[in-house]
Length: 315
Ligand code: TXA
Ligand code: MG
Image (cartoon, rainbow, N blue to C red; front, side, top):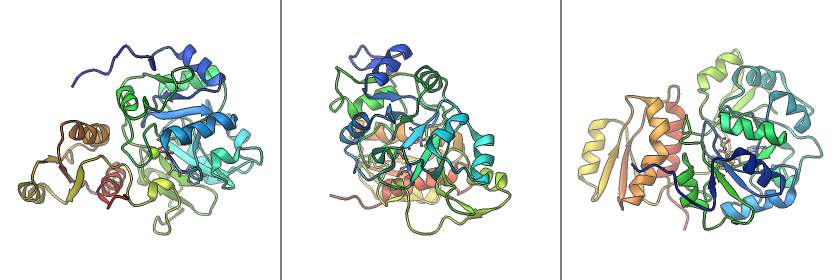
C-alpha cells in the first residue's frame, strides 16, 4: 500500500505547530496508540463544539479527555475510586479510559451533560509530547465521521475529515500508523464494582485480574455511544463467520466479496482491522466476510467492532 506521506495543508509532523493550533482554539487530529483522535482544548467550549460539527456527532455524546499524566486526574474528577486508582496505576499510559464523577467545572460540551467524565493518558510518544507541550487536557473522540470506521493513519483522517476541517485553524499531526489499531477499553469506575463499557486494547481478563475479580458483568443497557448497534461501519456490507470453512461458503454465495481472517494473530487482526475495511471500500468490494475470533484477549474487542460493523445500518 502507498505510504500516507503527502504534501498537504493539514498534515504535519511538527508537534510545536500542533500545540500552537490547540492553544489558538483549533482542532488537531492526533495519533494515539489506539486510533487517531480529533483533539481540542477540553476547557475551550467553542473548540469542543467544533469537534461535534466536524464529526457530525450528536452533541449529547461525551468525549474522552486525554491527559499528560496521571496526576491531572484531580483536575477533572474529585472522586477517584479505588478501582480507578488501581487500573490507572497499572495501565497508564495506555489504552484504558476510566469513567469518573466529573468536577463541576468540567464543560457540559465535553461530558454531553452527564455528571461523569472519561479520562485517559495515551502511550503514543507523539501524543504524549503534544500533551506535555500544551500541559492541558485534550478532548478527543476518534477522528472519523460519526458511525464510520476509526482512522489508524493520518491518511485515513485526511480521507474522513479534510472536507470538514478548516485550513486556517486545524491540523492533522502525522505520527504514522497507530501501534494497536483498536480503541481503548472503557471502564465505568462510578459504580461498584466497576464495569467494562467497551472492550478494547486492554484485555478484559487484565482488568478483571487487576480488580481481583471485582467487576460488574457487561450485560445491560448500552451506556457508551460506541455501544449502539451500528458503528465502526465501512460502506461495504460486513458479514460474519464463526470459522474459516463457514467464511469460504459464505463468500462463495456472496457476489464481489472478500474474506477477512486474521484469527491466527489477534495483534495483527486489531492492527489491520480498520485499514482492511477502508481498503475494501476503496476497491469497491461489496461485502467483507469477516471471521470472528474467540472472545479471549483482544478477540473480545475485535468481535465487538465486527459485530457493530455488521449490524443493520441506519438510513
Ligand atoms: O482509544 C480511544 O478511546 C480513542 C482515542 C482517540 O483515545 N477515542 C475514542 O473516542 O474511541 P470515541 O469518542 O470515539 O469513543 C469514546 C466512547 C464513546 O462511546 C463515548 O460515548 C464514551 O466513550 N464515553 C466518553 N465519556 C463517557 C462518559 N462520561 N460516560 C460514558 N461513556 C463515555
Ligand atoms: Mg469513535
